View 1 (cartoon, rainbow, N blue to C red):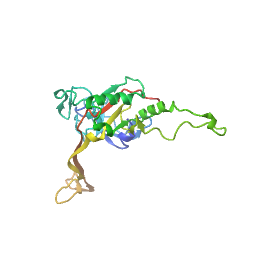
View 2: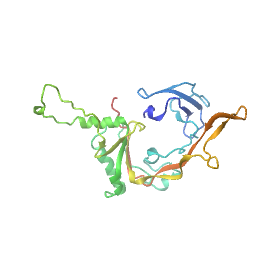
View 3: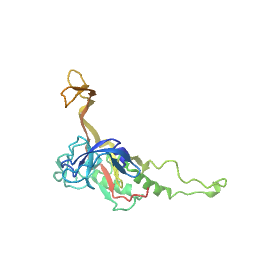
View 4: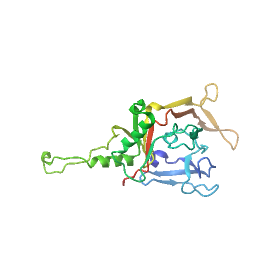
Length: 267
């Protein structure tokens, strides 16, 4: 995960010792160093219920920290097995129907067979003629795009007789590949290192109860003065809110696949 796209300079975050637990408190990030994956804080890290420690969760200020209290993403639905639940539905009640095919590479590197192995598992679950297979794409972190590039770069053939001049040929293209196994590869700097997700766009959608919009305080008023809690009067500043009620859904969790614990090349 890239810190530069996950958190920002001067952002206030909450620290939780566990998902669904009580928050330790808040801290302010002063600077984010995405190259070394380091956060610098301008405030002391909170210690309610124990000092901030390795394994704690950093979450957006104001969130509850409850499991499932945010937007449902790939990791909500792309889970293999019949234990646990998804959006409150016990997986054991519908064995295999809420389970996503997966391959655990156990620290091994990507190989050209991986896309086919995963697709075979998906075809076993859906059938070889399933329409969902036509709309699938890969979502990968940059380390796995590099791993795939390293595979393809090693199988190039050069006819030295066709190279003119005394300068050696540049074997590296300007950009890395944007497909994997013939399917589009979307690279996300928020993606989990060492993991690849194969997604079918035909099974995903948005359920929306309240579209994103400015909060209406009444009579069309969307901006209000800020109350001075010390005096009971009003400050010179104004405040407004955006509110929404929506989430993502996946209508068929077997129409996907994912790989975990892929070897991460040196970057």
